[in-house]
Image 1 (cartoon, rainbow, N blue to C red):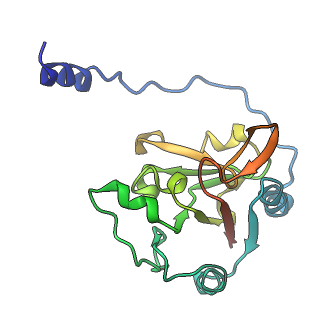
Image 2 (cartoon, rainbow, N blue to C red; image 1 turned 120 degrees about the vertical axis):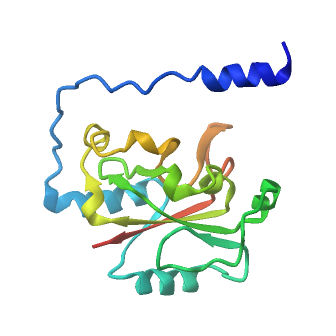
Length: 192
């Protein structure tokens, strides 16, 4: 069987999208009024920095004061043009990426997990290959628990991932190491 025939068979062999089974709801024990505070506390617990911002101008000013924007920077947030780096077909150039700014679709207060889908990421590797990640999340898109978030995720966007803070591992001499396998920092801006 030729390589092309094998690849063609694989492409045509994708299973149909199956609906998720009905699951009994698990109510959140986090009051709606406490979602933002709980979320920002968990961002810090996960090794990130959580910041309340009133506007994209606030976000832009904070980013400019915290990061060297002369280094390769890429923003996928509408209205926050900080780009001085253009992704190309040569993805090895992403090795030099210092900062990526992404918009989270929905975020979870109980663990600060933020959902990013293929539409907001552009290139799937962005949040994992850059040194620094900035996420912008609307407080309107906060939910209490992981059970609730799955009701809000659009499964038709293709790839998606939860990210909760910078890269962490504790398998090296059983000591917590931040940034060994991905971003060294993650700052989350919580917008109204």
